[in-house]
Image 1: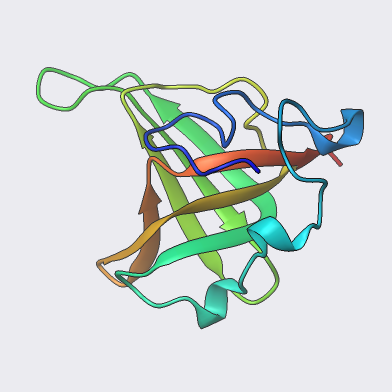
Image 2 (image 1 turned 90 degrees about the vertical axis):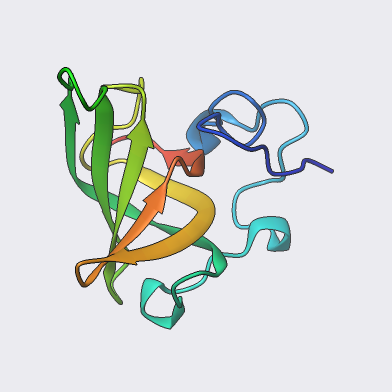
Length: 127
């Protein structure tokens, strides 16, 4: 059975594209191992697993104080959560329209839901 990894690495230390089959010891898409919760039901400070479509993706190179980061807004029909990967301005295949499942600790910053450096699993090709 696969286990969740820490940091910004994908769930099995590499991205899984469910449209091409699973990689490594990843569970099949939709399996109960990584059951996603609706964004609207998630509460701050909880470790959550959510799935949806990336509606907006933007990367920054950073400056003298802040380093690079990649931000993406994931929507699942019940709400939105902002995903932030610190230390990188892009991740291959993390792009608008991509279906993705992520896990991490949910924070709330100025009224918006945020998961920093989430583990992720690519669910399908771009729509």
